[in-house]
Length: 550
Image (cartoon, rainbow, N blue to C red):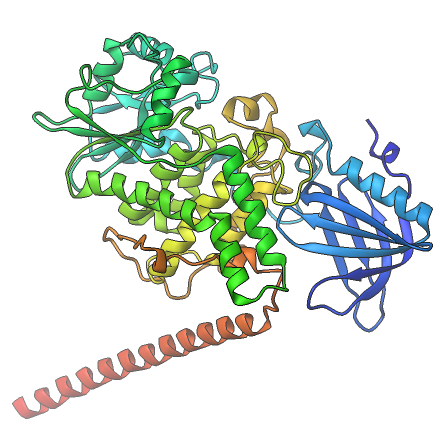
């Protein structure tokens, strides 16, 4: 298909762009296969706006006489308005944008056409491979092995080709366990706690059904993670009621009679349309500037967004507590094991593992626990808060995870190497990007699409020194301790950097951030002077003592 067929009017002059906190600007609007480009063409202050069609969530059209207005609502939550003279031109541009922003084929998306203008120092597709992770694990324990059982994605379509499993369990047993787990997602290693050798595994629900079906290989697999005489914890991210209802559909949970060494705890984390509705209500509340204080607070509460943040953080803290304080191994699962399960396992690692609080460590976590673990980004991030069409698979699962990370970052501002901008950047690229990293729903789909050969990785761009400097936290001081975030309601705040970013001027925040960086820089200079003076003083004292001895 040629993009030209979808572009009825490629260019319009005398278009006026309106954005909150900016003066209206007149200029030329151009449509390409992947971008909406607005150029002010002013000699004194030329201004350009490049907007990916894939970032457009919905558009609205209004007409006053022959003047048409298009309101564009984006997946990154910003809203822009274009005033276009001429009804026909406006209708043509609106229908072109609608067609270009809802392309069905993944291979027509911008990452397949993007050619980087920067020098590629490191191939992001080659970063964070399972073999490297296993090497780190092998340096501290020999109880695990790399299994290539899923080499052709033949056992589990949503798992990567290589997984880490207990050494005592062979591939034949893994095949039997896969048949006993929803979507064939058998238990695999998520995290090894060096401090005490405890582990966190993740999987999908067991297919026990109403007959109480069992699988001895499954029991053996998860028992292989226990120390003699120790108990383990199964954290089920569904309520007991939902887990019991799942049995009627062939699913279920681990029954105590077959897993006597494991204690099951239910921590209800919401899914799918409930989360999507929550995001829509929250963004609606944030965009309404007419609220009085009572109405704003009641709308914020009615969205339930912070309740979801609290539920996820509570479950993650529980998993971390079982591992670090109880000295017990943990298995986490919900139904499919591709959403709430990954929120819990990845947040628990941020609490427990200082490496996950570094930039590269966090990137590795996103790759390992989200991309390789089969979180369906293509489905979940297909629409954001403004879309008019109600589809059942969209949910801000990854955004909620990033929000939880921001809550911990805010409580421990010196323990993270990355800043808030790093998290916002990941949110933006998950929903619309020139990079292929978040395309597809799992490694199987990415392999079929040949993304490593045909698209650029986000990490190739982020990990260049000139980009990294934007995402580094100037307050960072490496902290090797476990960090325990507060989940008390008064400790959790609305993430203004995402939800109020387009609704308030950022000038003063930017100035404050600049001032903080200057203070830290000046402090380092003074520290260097102090150290130099101390060395000088020590040298003078040494000279004095030598002269006294003569």
